[in-house]
Amino acid sequence: MPSLTTYGWFLLTAAAFVMIPGPSVLFIVGRSIALGRRAGLLSVLGNALGVCLVITAVAFGVGALITASHVAFVTLKAVGAAYLVWLGVQTIRHRRRIAATEELPTGRRLLLQSFVVGFTNPKSLAFFAAVLPQFVHRDAGPAASQLEILGVTFVAIGLLSDSVWAVAAGTARTWLASDPRRLRRLTGAGGVMMIALGGILLGADN
Image (tube, rainbow, N blue to C red; front, side, top):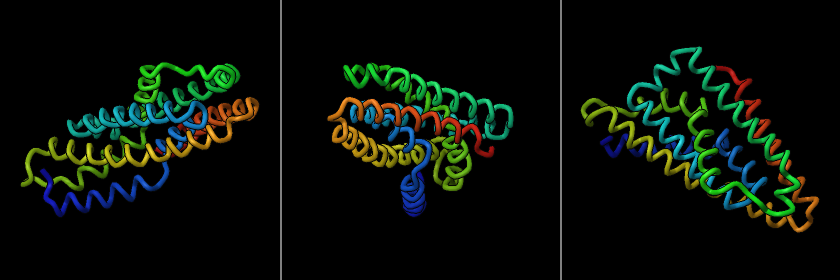
């Protein structure tokens, strides 16, 4: 268990990082605008579960191996970016049906889709592999346990922050969705955001 001082500094660092909108926030906002509050909140949960798997990989040294390997890191980045683009394209393709019937993917499917996005986000992997070890001390217990505690804390902060974004974006969608044509545009705009995010991640420096 990290000391209270170390844990306090980590809380400040994590809160500061979470407050800066990044790929996860853009993904959540895009989903909430396209599909509504429920889909946005389920996407928050699925994304967090994917990030938890990333933290586990970092805790057991897999994350460091991936970030050290240019091929592995670029492959992960390409897979994540391509999946985001695919989700965005599907949202745009089916925007008329979504707007007309409010037919959304099942909760299980929403969780799975956002889990994949969270797990394949290269920025999360790079951040956890570089930052979490800075708060680990040998005399505070097993390193893997400390990393898990710090990582779960970060995910909890992210869950709260991302949920606020999801509710805000989903509420805005509900408020603006009285006109079916406007709802179609909002759904399409959410899809465009996901495609743009995939392009940004793919084009970002390694």
